Image (cartoon, rainbow, N blue to C red):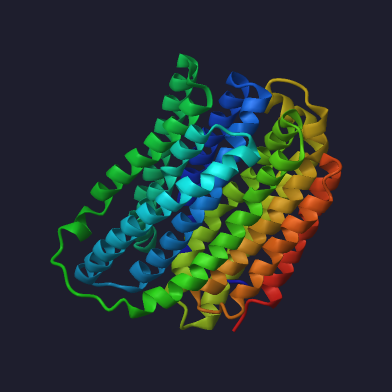
Length: 402
């Protein structure tokens, strides 16, 4: 019998509220952009955001690692040392990757039919993707869920308001991306105030040898998950006409609300299961609590998608798009499978059961092959996406373990 974990329920509830506000604001960001931009322009914005989501592999993996170590480290002086070292190294690596990105963006801009200057501007997110999660990881690990939630909401508000203003001023996709960058930058600056108690503490040298060996599986697992739910939009942009790519992007962003909506559960679960990783019974109880909450939310979302897809698409886009409505439920199923894989893999990361994580890369290749081969129609493409996502879930359960 599962014992209710009050800390998980409380943490999930706080983050659920914060994340839902954050996600609602992001939803209205896309809700507004799809009305202010042409369908083809929105396809460009969706492709750029897919690149941002893939870049978020650094954000998520760094935050995961810092969360684990800040949950276990009780000495604020040592935590300050970890914070400073990680921030410096993250900034240094991000600048190197930014330069590499600028070179890769040249052929990529031609392949995706996107202005190179837009690709360049989008690349600034690399620097923010490396630095923002350091502070947020500490907030999450110390279970400062209120501060973490406020920080995320601030990011979404600034992004939403500025993007609308800049697009209305005629900057189109440039305005939307600029607003996003300023929003994340603002949140980064404010996060330093939330960890003021750690920054004011007397610094002590911390042993961080194990942090790098833990970073590798955390980075790889995050890379697989974020690539899995992002790359479909990029492949659609390559194989389909711009208008069809935009139609798919509208359904895709709605389906991804399942992933974003279930993130509070896994984020609240992670520090609690990491904190209890020496007690298998307590850590497994945390996981099964999270799984029950997850399944409840996903089932509700899929039922709504199945019975109200036309209505949802019309409300979101402002017009009837039968092609988007016809694939919304299928994309929702695919994203649900990816979200469940994410929950399972994060739990295994929190308790150190990550042997075999490198096998997951095979399933990214499988996804790319399936989506590339089955690209004769959006329906066929969506079924291929479900198949690849189901394979990832199987791998997460069977291949990644002790």
